[in-house]
Structures are given as structure tokens and as C-alpha cells.
Image 1 (cartoon, rainbow, N blue to C red):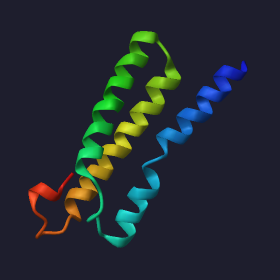
Image 2 (image 1 turned 60 degrees about the vertical axis):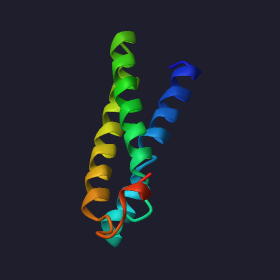
Image 3 (image 1 turned 180 degrees about the horizontal axis):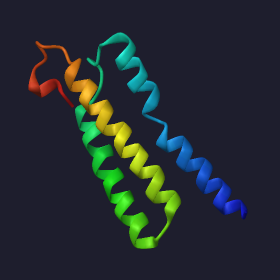
Length: 94
């Protein structure tokens, strides 16, 4: 395996798992007051675009890692909505 592929795989693993600590913390504490909904939305759009890019490039590393990232993002979004403070104003969501 070529060094560029190894670096690409390691980078994709790191970025794919980057939201996992936040997701685990939300689930354990049942709190999501500090989670930025705007960040999750931008990350979701970026993940979808990366999947499309990976399909166009026929690159399984990009496709798989960003599919997993998008799923983690969706689950994080779900829990951030479920555990959001009830009295939080819409202007404070970003």
C-alpha cells in the first residue's frame, strides 16, 4: 500500500470519528446545551458533498468514511435536539 493511501485512510478515520466524543458526552449527560446546530448542519452538508465527490471519483475510502461521518452527524443531531434545553431561544441555536 502506498504512503498516500495510508495517510488518506488515517485522516479519514480521524475526521470520521471526530464527532463521536461529543455524541458520547451528550448520551451520557443527556445535555446538549452547548452543541451548535449550525455546525451540525454545515457538517451534514459537507459530508453529503464528500460522499457525492467520492462517488464521482470512485473512491471507496472517501465514500465509506463520509457515509459513516454523516450517520454519526445525524445521530448527534437527533440527540442534540432531544436533549436541548427547553427554554433556549432560537437566536441562540448557532
